[in-house]
Image 1 (spheres, helix red, strand yellow):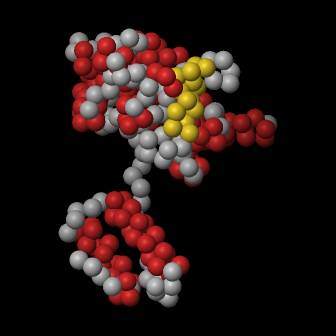
Image 2: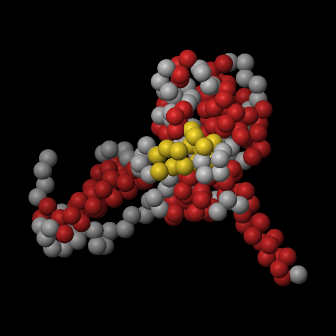
Image 3: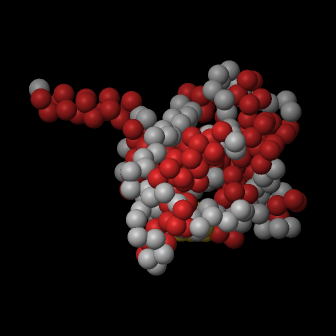
Length: 250
């Protein structure tokens, strides 16, 4: 259905958001993303003077992002130490742990080629790649835990023939099997593959005093504000900062 741009007013904006959240069953966050894209189109119309008044001028989205869930070091250690009888769980666990120590998303791990793992500026192995989502350059030093997994699957037939670094399963399996891994490891959190990326940002890097600018660059964020959300979740950073303050005040 085509709608004349001249008919887009504040009432239409409010009605469209209501339509997304009711008729289309969008979550508040998903509806906010659609509204963000819609707003870009309206701004383009304003730039071309196809309309003279901004219908979004009094519109404010109130959707709050869900709190990002991540694993603590203790939970991560439990998953790494657990011996799984089923090979498929051990396989998925390895890929998940690799993402925890590199911060790569599912799409980035799946396309990761052996050829992009090379020596970096310090002479050690780095992942020299780009993000699938934003196409931003992502250079990540390979931590020992991640290198161990890369070495474990070196020469693995399904990977070697395609120059892939790891044998990543389908998105569905990589998100369903971690729930079994969590149960077997005594973890009550709902484990998803994307939680590995959150864990890298918080438990692996920020909690260990890696500067937020460095973390942002490794994650491939185009805006450091995205990375700052992770820093806000860490009580450990608050505790460390306050201990530093206490020492200064003595």
